[in-house]
Length: 133
Image (cartoon, rainbow, N blue to C red; front, side, top):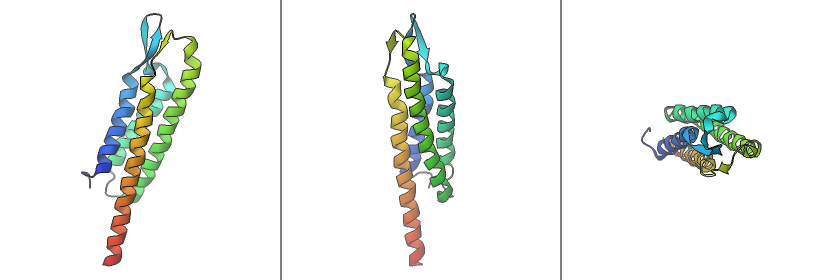
């Protein structure tokens, strides 16, 4: 079941979480400020992206995959919270703020929710087929 649509959703969530690390969040004294300067967001983003990649390969154990993807959604919310907190602390140092990177974890969160729904639908389908046997 690695070719299922939830695999694509998880892969896209991982991409958006890893791309977040390389985006510029603003300008401070004529130099670009990268997301790497925020340690909490960097760690949460790497852990979240890794969790999405791990969840892709758990297609044989859908119950565990559902738990991992549920944890991924919580981690995505943690990345969003970390960015919001970082936004309130850092603006005093930045001359220009770039708000585009803040959409990346929100999109990853949406993809993780879609993947969770897809895995739950697969589990429901398998259970209904088990009843027919």
